[in-house]
Image (tube, rainbow, N blue to C red):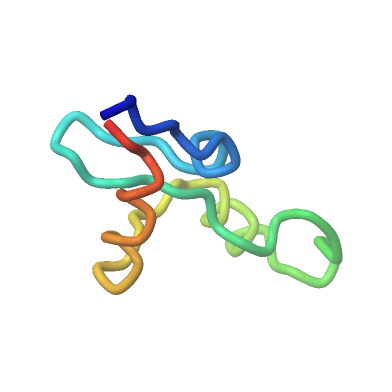
Length: 64
């Protein structure tokens, strides 16, 4: 059976941590930033973890 290919769009958006969790960037940092508070924009910089509901679907795209 041939090797499974990684979906490159997924590989660019997500990273796998050393413990096997999947990190993602937060939404809401692209535009309309003047209407958001400094604290809210600062918190959007931090990476978040993928929710358990989406984990399996995203992990399958990573064909490890």
